[in-house]
Image (cartoon, rainbow over all chains, first blue to last red; front, top):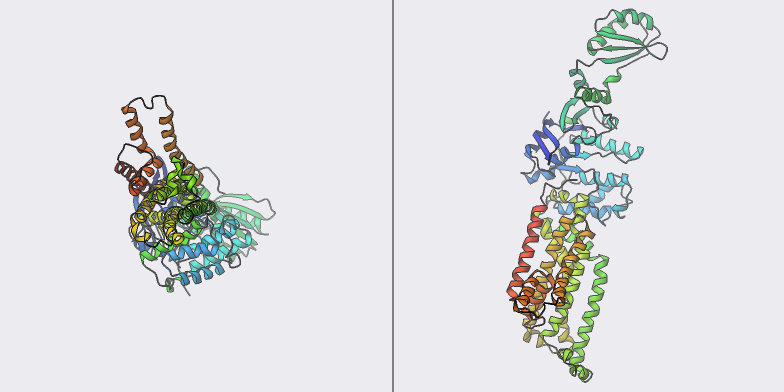
Length: 316
Length: 301
């Protein structure tokens, strides 16, 4: 994987308050989630990557070029900020056209491109209305259109799904996934885990300005060998399965579930357990109605990581 | 198509140079500044004053009998003729409207961008710090010129129009020069401090109020010196009053205007060049504030 976004020891302080601390990571094409509780440093990190903030230490690179040194970086970077950014008295069309023109496009080109972008985010009908009067969802879509204005290779999205209705959320998620499939590098920040989970399994986990973990959620989970994982089984042959699993050294504990036929067990070696269990099912002919690993979800991984680091707050 | 098989395709449009991008920024929001409701109302007052002066010029040239009664009052004698003093009077009237318009329109120019976090967004277009400041200055200056330079020059040309004295355009060219120079000084020394306050105060109304206080402070100071009992108590106090007047924006404007139109109104002892230095210092300080506060990558919510 070629890294289009690279962070080297990226650090930012606000006076005595630490924004982000020594973050080193590489992100390649596709969608990557930036997860963290409120105040974890997500927006600061995105601002550092977008060149809106100067790092106290370290550097950020976009497509191999250092942010802050090379202005051509800005043409390869799209940023959808969390806050409303200077719509003023402009209509949606004027806002996009203005920014495109300031980016260097001619009047006609800028207008054509703005029309195309507004149509893509479903704002064609509201194009001539004052952007300040748009609903929250419409403003989010307008900001997304601005992020996509220059067809950037790298797109940074700060809480893009906040304030959207379910329909808008689905459309926005579809758009973000499509960008990822097109080969763009999309970094999406959120503190709502299932939102990110619906977009990607590749994440950066931030906590109190530090990078807690990065990579695929399953890989992160596999590296946490000391944290047992739950497996929930549902089978009419529960008793026979129970007897066999009780003798399995990979299984740490066994409990009957609340539903009849349900069994919950804990294991530290999930892949080994699943492999053994598959063989047993084939050999004994057990009927398994359901098998799930709830601790594999992003939320569970995040919770366990926070517990290991001494964080106690839940996620939104 | 698999991700690895795809390549990034930039938008195919051609891209213009730095100057074009800067001009797009200036012109893009100039319309918004010129459509400001405050500008409309203030321009209306200015228009009334302008037509009053033009009427006076017409009366002097064509109906001098009507103005006979004016010549009998010593204080208003200068209204019975058109001279550099007529233009000086008009331009000094415009000072108040320059201040008012700067406070009403200029207060929000940068404060609005800062409140919305749009400054870094513009810088990442990319627009340089110099480009941003000069663009905002030009937008405000364009509005201020509508209540200083434009009516001043219109009055100058208007005189020829109402009197059919076309030689006036060449004969009194120093007056036209005075109007241009004085307007530029008004505009620069009002726009830069206003933009600096807009940048520092964080809110358009607060910035406008701060500028109004700064302007009115100048007048209040003069009023204070003239009202206190020690006035006339010696040369030292008079000198103190005159040196303190260097801190007053309107009094400095008066000094400069009188110097460039070759007339005397207020009879201040300080040389006009000192006032020019004071205004240049104020403008330079304001620019320094803008330059240090508006860092391209430092503004964050």
